[in-house]
Amino acid sequence: MRTLIDRARESGVTVFAFGDLFLEDIRAYRVQQLAGTGIEPIFPVWGTPADTPSLARAMIDGGLQATLTCVDPKQLDARFAGREFDAALLADLPATVDPCGERGEFHTFCYSGPMFGHAISVQPGEVIERDGFWFADITPAAIRS
Image (cartoon, rainbow, N blue to C red; front, side, top):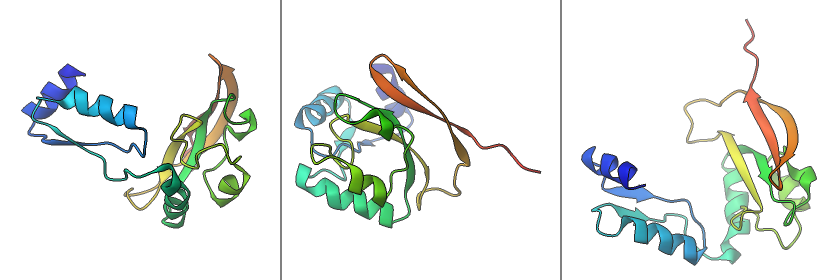
């Protein structure tokens, strides 16, 4: 981490933006790692657990497209691995699961959205269990001529 921070600073970076949503211990860790480095940590989507349902809907409504690539079966049924992050998924999530996966319930791969110059063409792959988690492969879609 120190090497990365040093390289960033040498390149003129003055701010690191993090997508953390509400976990205070994670935020404190990031702030601690950057303390005294000259790089400011910012948290542009920081809020409370109550904010994440509307954030998830806003991301989807804004054109974000993503697939669940990792699921923690202790928190969410393994059948969610490989599902699209969409309104149907949000409707199917148990009430105990954060709709943005902030507590590690799931992780996503974003392949399209307004922040992309163009979508990444992908296709679903194999879903496997490894190290106590379920992983859904995402592979490049075949290029058609």
